[in-house]
Image (spheres, rainbow, N blue to C red):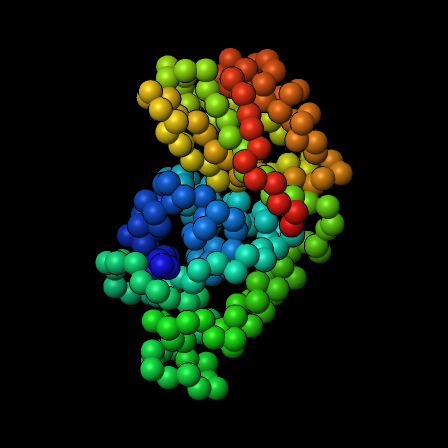
Amino acid sequence: MAVAFYNLNVESGIKKLDEYLLTRSYITGYQASKDDVTVYSALSKAPSSEYVNVCRWYHHIDALLRLSGVSGEGQGVKVEGSASITEEVIATPPVADTKASAAEDDDDDDVDLFGEETEEEKKAAEERAAAMKASGKKKESGKSSVLLDVKPWDDETDMKKLEEAVRSVQMEGLVWGASKLVPVGYGIKKMQIMMTIVDDLVSIDNLIEDYLTAEPANEYIQSCDIVAFNKI
């Protein structure tokens, strides 16, 4: 099921989005998709740093769009300018200011908020993403999206310090994305964090061995594992 968002350019809407992203890296699924592009496009400006979860997600999607674009289909998301979020509904990305009808499937620009995504809507979403990509850098080859598990020493490890240690590693071709804490048992949590790399510039093995599990980061980090590695 897809989620609905309202009033994303006012404080109440941003707060709802921040709460939603507290336990999620993306709007839907486990990789960046058109749903992220839809919500990203609905924001008139970068969110305030007060909303930590939205900021991380926003800058991650912004980096993906500038570096390589987003190709995932997503599950559909509804973004409107009024009311409040009351429940999750099956919806499709809004592509125009329309009053949709679930019973209609004609050749105009209406969006069926409670039906399956039409070919016209898919095409419009693709064109929107393409236009956003064109406004940034040209697509470069040899980039990957990586999901990393970062494990602490024990349940007494300061996870905030652990995240700071991870994000302190900066190098050309590396962009850190959204992160979240995942319980593993006995009061211990691990951190999952997304990153985008330029393959020719960043070696994941070297990043882990020479930076993340070496001094000074290894004061907080016991080990790192690659959960997902996708070419983009």
